[in-house]
Picture 1 (tube, rainbow, N blue to C red):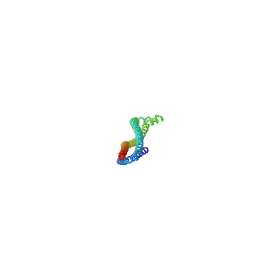
Picture 2: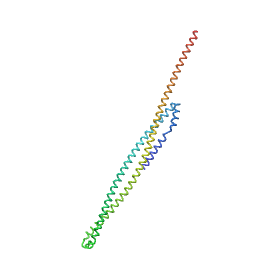
Picture 3: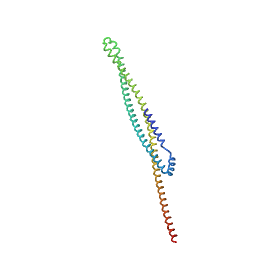
Picture 4: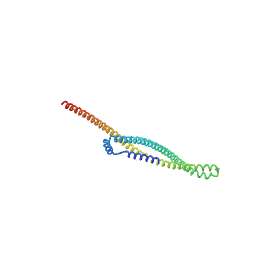
Length: 243
């Protein structure tokens, strides 16, 4: 359930990033409109830059969180691998002990078969304690063998469960890695768009400064021309007055 929640959270982040991406044609159209209205252009670009910067910071935080989750999953997988190795080693030891006990039991059975005739002849002379001891000696290997078999079965079940959990963790790790790569791609896209917006903003500011400079030059030239016309008119009037 935790992995599914993490996966849904990553998908929501990717959808949010998709929402904030927009085509280059819209940017070009907005830039053309902005050239006609510098104030609207500046406010619109500043809003977009602020939105992109906020989204970029949020995405970087999410990427760091995903990296931390991936590291935790890798640690869990390594712990499962160590547990599987230890359980497999323990099963191997128990199987060897079981094999040794089986061999010992076979030797005891063979020994009992050989000595059964002598035991039947001398059983009347043995005490009850001796008979019980022999019975316990003959039955204990089979009981230990059954106990080892049960332990081996339980450990095999635990090993199978650990393998299944390991496969699940590896699958979750692969999914998170894939989503992490997609998130990185979107971060790169947002960074490129942010750089493009900054470049366009700089170009538009330069164009606006050139436009203001041109208007100022035109106003200066108009004033100079007006002063020249006034001076010329004064000279003509003075000349006509002298005549």
